Length: 234
Figure 1 (tube, rainbow, N blue to C red):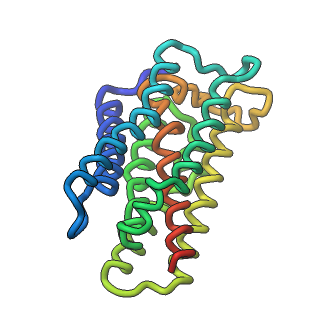
Figure 2: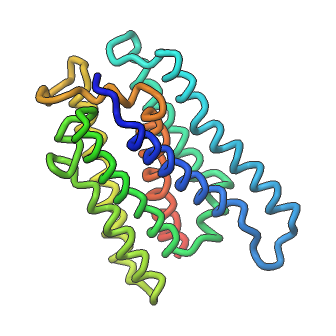
């Protein structure tokens, strides 16, 4: 498996850090009139959430415990469990706090992190670590979600964005997210593999790139669920 450059590793870790900071700020930022003890408690909660979201997958990857063909294939078991846990988190008190305290512009604009992520995936393909179908040079158009997140987020910040525009953005972004996850699964070295050209994306079973499916994809999924909750509340 080709080894990504140190620059790509640092860029990836930087993006993970930015998304993590946004989560902490969203949960721990003190609202007007809120007791400091409450915001401090939510700061601690945010750190616990991040630890649960990142440490188990990192340890599993570091120990070489993530496989694609075992019984069960532990990588897919990790993906399933984190996806379910993220959905639970979105409807937990933490998700409620974000929905009630973060404006629709912030919830939409958060998805803009997918723009630099897709540029990084393209770079990793150039280094031979990912197949072309997982980039915008192939079949992955999730970069559109990042662009729309920035555009619709700015629109919402500038004025009242129509409900249909928010819903359209969220459905498009979610569909593109499901599409790239499906492409990735069909590119992996399993009996389900349908894309046989280029390198299989086994890099996602190693640290730090395990945080692509276990954290960044989950963050996008989490964000879409929060937007749906915001729309329901409105």
